[in-house]
Amino acid sequence: MSKIYTIGYEGSSIDNLIATLTAVGVECLADVRELPLSRKKGLSKNSLAERLSASNIEYRHFRQLGDPKAGRLAARAKDYSKFEAIYLAHLSSPAGQQSLAELLKVAEIKVTCMLCFERCAHVCHRSYIADQAAMYGFDVFNLVADRPDEYLSNEAKIPRYNPRKSFTAAE
Image (tube, rainbow, N blue to C red; front, side):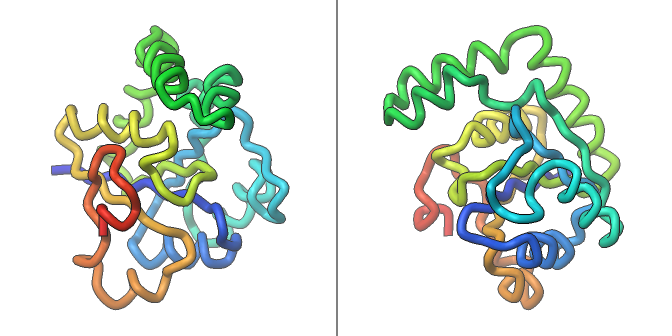
C-alpha cells in the first residue's frame, strides 16, 4: 500500500521543514497552495524549490488543488461550513480531479508529502485531499514541521491521518 504525508509549515522554519521531510524519506514535495507565496523566508515557490533541490527533494506545485480565494476568505472568517462547501466543489471540478489524479500518480512512485501553511491538517484543505487519497487506498500520515528529531528516532510515532481531528487527537 502506498503512503502519502501531509505537512504544514506554520510556526516552523525552512530548515526544520527540510529536516522533517528528510527524516521520513520524502522524495517529492507537493505544494497544494493555490498561491505558493509566503512571508516566511525560504517558503515561497522558487526559493523553496531551490532549497528542496539542494536536499534531493523534488518540488511540484499543484495549483488546482489549492484552496480558492473564496474558500480562504470563508476559513479566515471561521465559516468552516462555507469553506468546506467551496473547497469540496473546487476539488470535485474536472481540473481539481485531474490534479488529484496527477498527485496520486506521483505518490505511487515517490514518497510524497503535501504542503500547505496550517500546522494542523484538520483546519486545512489538505485534509480533504487526504480524504481522497485514503479512498484510493493510500495510508496518510500527518507531519509537523518543527519536530524533525522526533521522526528521526521512530517513524512509528508519526500520527496517522485522522480526518478533521485536532492535532492532539491525531497523536
